[in-house]
Image 1 (tube, rainbow, N blue to C red):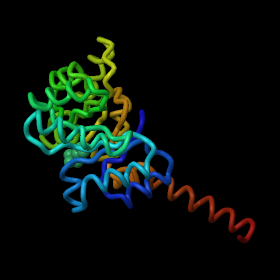
Image 2 (image 1 turned 45 degrees about the horizontal axis):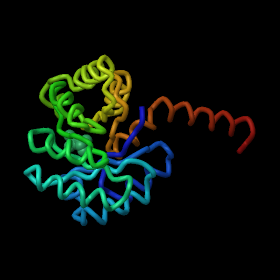
Image 3 (image 1 turned 45 degrees about the vertical axis):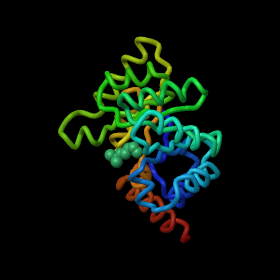
Image 4 (image 1 turned 90 degrees about the horizontal axis):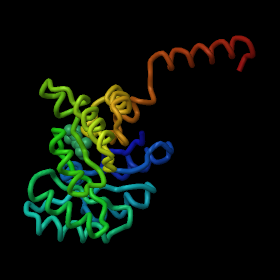
Amino acid sequence: MKLFLDSADCEEVRLAAELGVISGVTTNPTLIAREGKDLRETVRTLATLVDGPISAEVVAEDAEGMIEEGRELAAIHPSVVIKLPIGLDGLRATQVLSRQGIKTNVTLVFSIAQALLAARAGATYVSPFVGRLDDLSANGISLVRGIAEVFTLHGISSEIIAASIRSPQDVADAACAGAHVATVPYRVLLQMAAHPLTDLGLARFRRDWKDAFGK
Ligand code: G3P
């Protein structure tokens, strides 16, 4: 399973890229708004930081507007993937853009039925939102597992990006459930690398070494 960073903060992305574990970036209108910077400029910068898919989401509400925005965003850099919300307009835009060779990421997916529609419309990626289902006491990972089972059973090539990730356990569960990618906030990426027993063990190694060799 690959890891993408779910962020529009270019400094976070730069730091994450230095670890060598990130294969792409996903953004969304909320993440872009939080940074308050121009979407196109942000996407252009992100494409220089990470050698992989950069998801940029359209904000138009009708298919024609989504298609126009998608074409414009895709022209920024070959790495750009157009993020489209699942729904009738998003599906119309997905099938038009996909047929023109533009990679698409259908987002805000909360059911297997939605994921199946997105795949049939030609989506390169589908993004089920794990955390937002868990927030409602639903089981977000079971959705990922169900989509993975259906895609495998029917030979569907669209890739599953487990999104709305809240913890390192979500990442592990997504990997076990068959997601192709987990897109993680920078906070979660740092949490993935840390463990209290690792800290305790390293402190013990260093103390024992210093006790024996004095440095
Ligand atoms: O960017 C899509 C998704 O990962 C956002 O998740 O629930 O943290 O806003 P959330």
